[in-house]
Image (cartoon, rainbow, N blue to C red):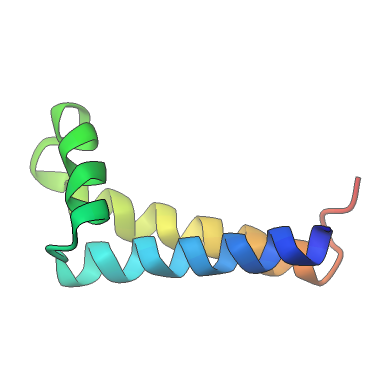
Length: 69
């Protein structure tokens, strides 16, 4: 189960990173941006780049077993 969760976290983190980096126009990313824009303003894409990298890094750490319970 932990392997599946870590792979999902890596995939979601990379999608967040790529969406923020390219300022994607996909439907899911636009909905996320619309929810985050009131808090982050014009820095919303930078927020998704940074948070996507952090989520992917946590997924990698989980896959190697550094964040076991």
